[in-house]
Length: 472
Image 1 (cartoon, helix red, strand yellow):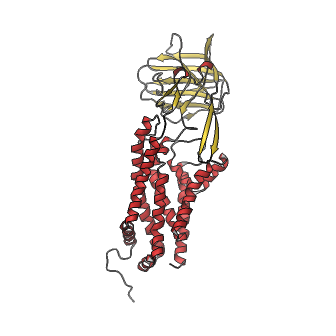
Image 2: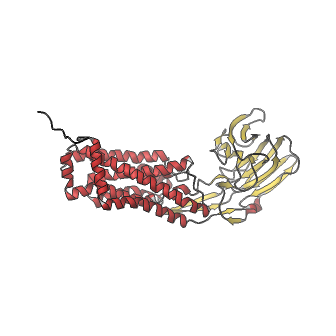
Image 3: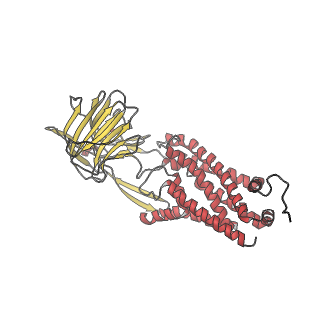
């Protein structure tokens, strides 16, 4: 017997199923409105969050507070400097360093100017984290695990700054090199001491409070020499948080310097401003979940699922077609929503003294595109749960509890417990939005996203088996 084959183009192929499911999705006015609301809710919440954000206060020269946009990194501490007109080097031995903070810094710095936020490079000794070459535009480059006493050297060649370290001042080890495009002509080079604040974090459901108290770092430097030689007194640039406790003395070639405040990114206890612009996705995903759940439960409620399975008896293919259509549509909506949120909210945040990353930054682009992928995977996850439960209200409730409750509950739990909760639940997927590594970062962006994808694959696989074995 010759099997029946449809004379229509595409037959009973998967492409025909995709077209059928897409036609269903776009033919229901309420579902179209839900799709539009995904974009509107995400953008409007981002706009509201940006409009209600406040400016910050940062330490000014002499320790006085000033309101307004801060530099993109902490630019504090005590710096004594001289002018370097062209290429050259600075060498010094950090003879001793107070252990005022595990990340206290003592070493050599070169910067384009003494203005707040000016580009810089510094080779530094820390009590607990060894030697590091740090700059404003690049990730830190780790040196040895050594601590004071330690010899340090900075070489400048055009716009390239190279850092070295040595245990005896004779055998030098290269740490790395950074490029500062703004380092043209004159530059300021000298000695730096900085010591971050001690932070006490109080976590409660729905938020956190961070109390910081300053620490005073102190270091002594000797065997300071420059090539070419530099004459004249050291000039003092003190941006310490507690300037009255800062000191600078020079006796017989030994310099003692103390200061407070930090040099480096505002990350460990700072806000992830780029992620803040994407918080609207938390509201937009509610519309995504509702759309994904109704996409199959509505057919069960009205009995239309019988006609669907009669036209395509291979039920797993129907589920797969629904998943592909939902994922594709939601990804496109997520791209429009996330790019729109960032483009609209970023100028407002900038005017309020906050600094989201530019879209040209790889971290920001990953967060924006990742938000769209996040919504797409959540849509497929919701479809799988709805296929198992077959009840709209129950499926929506279960999905939202799994995605949102871990994030809320985690803020009221001990950090060690909260970290594992955010790693092991589907809420780990939201890590794809993070652009800084904070003290409470539970999981990396791609690892967290992979956790959500694993849950989605598992739920979809179980749903496919149940769909095949269970009566429609």
